[in-house]
Length: 156
Image (tube, rainbow, N blue to C red; front, side, top):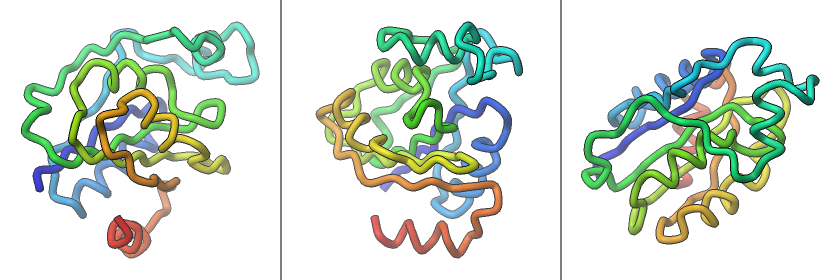
């Protein structure tokens, strides 16, 4: 089974977790890079006028991505990682999901967060990519061990 680990990282935490996960699954690693990088002011969730707040309050917001997966058709299993924003995935993940054909693919979300769980991410993703088999995801942290991640992978 050919595997892709795609991720969006705003502060570097998700990047580190994605790298660790990828080393365990032996897949290809792909960073979802926004065309316009997020500044610390953009990520201030306490400010209703910050970029992240504006995006998350607009269900139609689709931040542009500057990178592309060359040939997503060659992957059977795709892990999609992101930091939790407003109890779900950031709108840039919608951009990514809507850009490719996930029909028949196994998609597994994983998130990073200091305290919020993964919530309804799996069912939310399934609504965006109905032709995919979206499995139950997990919240990981920078301190998640290889053993914890392997135990989760065995449940898939």
